[in-house]
Length: 197
Image 1 (cartoon, rainbow, N blue to C red):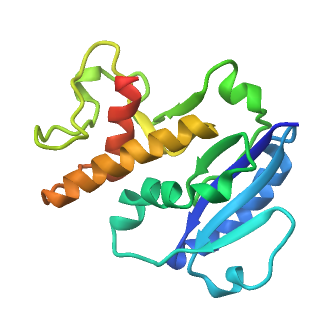
Image 2: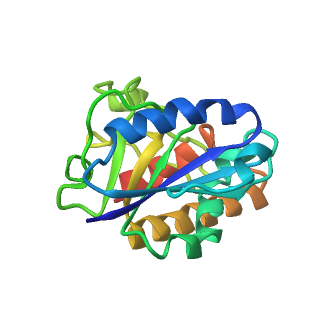
C-alpha cells in the first residue's frame, strides 16, 4: 500500500478548520493509501499527546503573509520527518473533500500534480494574475499554453515534492532579501514553477 504524508499548516486561528478537514479527508481522501498527517501548528492542545496517524510539529504563528510565503521552507526544513512516505500532499487549512479521491486520480503516471484555480479556469491567458514584477523570481512569461493553478492543493512523489519545496523556498528567500513579495505570495512562485515545468 502506498504511503502518503498530508502536509497541513494551522497556526493562529486556523486550528479551527482542522476537524472538518480531517473528517472529510478520513472519509473521502486516499482510502487506497496509508495516510499520515503532518500538522504544523502553534495550537497547544494539538501539541499535547499523539495519535496513530497524526504527527504535530510546533510552528510559530507569523505575521501575514509569512505563513504562506514560508510554507515550502517549513516543509523542506522538516524533510527528515517524511522519510517513511512515498508521496507528499499539501492541503490548505480550509480545504474540505466532498467526493472520493484516489492516488491514481491525482497522479496517474505523473510525479506531481497541481490544481487549476477555479476562479481563473478557462479565462484568457492575458488576464491571469501572474506576478509581473520583472525583479521577482516568480515572474511568469505568459503564453497561450499558460495555466493558473491555486496554491492550496498540490503534491507528488516525495523526492519531487521536496525538490520543488527547496526551489520555491530558495526563490522566496531571494525575493525577500531584495524586499520583494510576489503578488500572490507562494502561489505566485508555485505558478512560476508549474508553468516552467
